Image 1 (cartoon, rainbow, N blue to C red):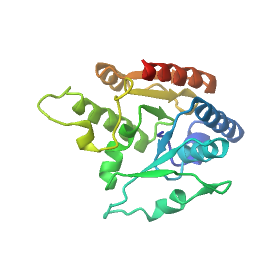
Image 2: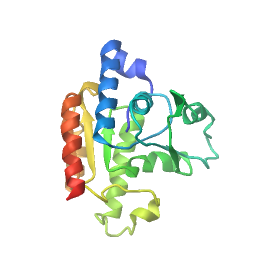
Image 3: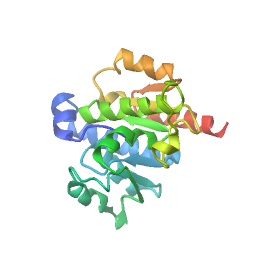
Length: 216
């Protein structure tokens, strides 16, 4: 999952989403993901992804995985520790952490630890994570043949494209516009899939569709 960290600015001020509507959307999204049987991957930090993760863990027993630059020397991770250690109903929110080594690798690799990118807002960080995820994917599927890059060499936990076409789901209530045209076309060039969903029920349908692809 990727999205904005500053909820008040991005969703309430910038997109004019009402706070009560925002809470309802978060609850509905978490319920759909739990009932669909998906695990979730996110950076343990403030923002919309963490809010969904808390509700997801409260509603069910699914696994929550955090990507964290545990070995970083430049910026450190002290500001993440309260999120990493957080609990909901006496259960830890996070079941496991993937060490991305440093913040530069964190931003580059965050989106390749899942089958699907769930886009919950076009912030500076989330846009970077999205495009770098697909750029690395481009390398390890051989779309830039002069660069030899293997998925597991980038990170042993990387899984983008292993089971289903590498996909992005854009949640329309939390974005102003569609993805940039050129970015869309690059994703399609890599045989990636883009799904725009306007509510949690459409999200449910897409998640069910993707699950059938994984079983084929």
